[in-house]
Length: 135
Image 1 (cartoon, rainbow, N blue to C red):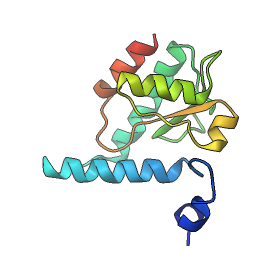
Image 2 (cartoon, rainbow, N blue to C red):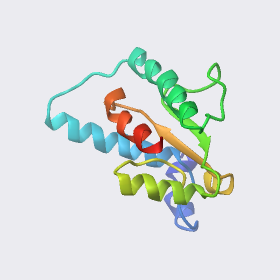
Image 3 (cartoon, rainbow, N blue to C red):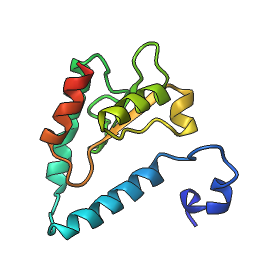
């Protein structure tokens, strides 16, 4: 059984053990919601096109991604929370604005890291309001 599906071990932890299951569950939930509106195919090309846009937008607001673009995955950008904020503080601010970002897992929180994922049917236009708020 994959470690991230080990419910018994997960229940012994304070907070999420990994970032991966939350994103997987959210993507699955979104897929079910979008199926009600009709299927939408998201291609790997579309996913790859979002990475550089997301990275450029993060750099523009002073939150450069940790990974160099040549090593970065196409769907998630990891960056350090703004000066003076913990990753949880930043997650809470984004949530108040209406955006879900990652930073709650112990691994990310200990390092003050935050993650923005653009998976599934999330468009560039949907990300624009978040980056405008960050500016």
